[in-house]
Image (cartoon, rainbow, N blue to C red; front, side, top):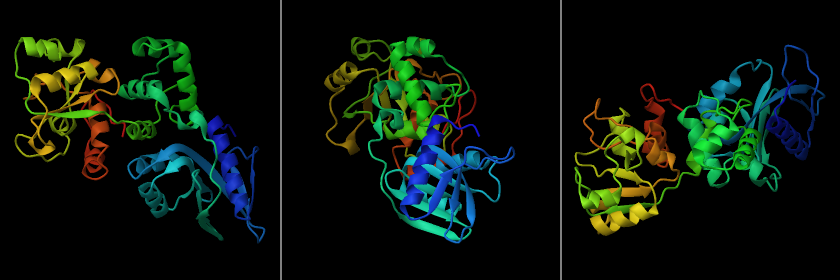
Length: 351
């Protein structure tokens, strides 16, 4: 059996958790050629249950269906599949339970079901997870995740990623290692989807400001100061339309009233401050003309989409990836939209 470092750690963690509830369990390093049993659990009756471990950084109600489809490939009918994850949300637990999957949340809960066994109890939490288990700790992790998800089929090397992100190759290499350990990229450094998307969504927290007015089209001293970037959209830096209005342009199943205030990403805090000064702060959120958000990563405002040839939208759009990350912040309607939205080519669905 060939086991990735994270999978091996997950198997060891599951053995410890099963042992803590009074059952015997052992890792099986040698198996038959047509089997991939990671662990054998021995019941008090002497019967044995074959278990195969599937590891993830996080499991949510949104990510679980896609993850289960991938995990089910090659899982024999008499083998119990157990998901071991750093975090499994309430919605993720419900999905796994309904689908008949067992799971271990490393924060301290085990659910193990199979022939002759039913365990659903708290267990000792894994202590000291460390940055390598998180995968996306730090700004470099967020930037690299965004870069990988923009083109999930592309294999990108350390030096190429470092050049694009203006980061030291050593930092990129360390981050790739952390992502691999966390199960967020594969051995070819390609993103594991939707796992990486939802891990990034957990850390996607742009800072926004509600404005009293919206910039007008055309040249002008104020527009130059605001760095709108309306010329040569796809090769320059500038404002990027995002969230609900942008999702609608891309064909996502959103419902919004006429005149819905747009949301924009701006390149940096300096631009956001200029926008507040020149356009004025809104008295209240309900009276805002628009909202500006500082882009969490430079790629947002550097990889914009010009929609003027195929949509009635003069504003440059944020890439569908970043629009989806904004929608993902709404645990209700936003995530329902994501479940029903697959962007047209050449963009990729990674959620």
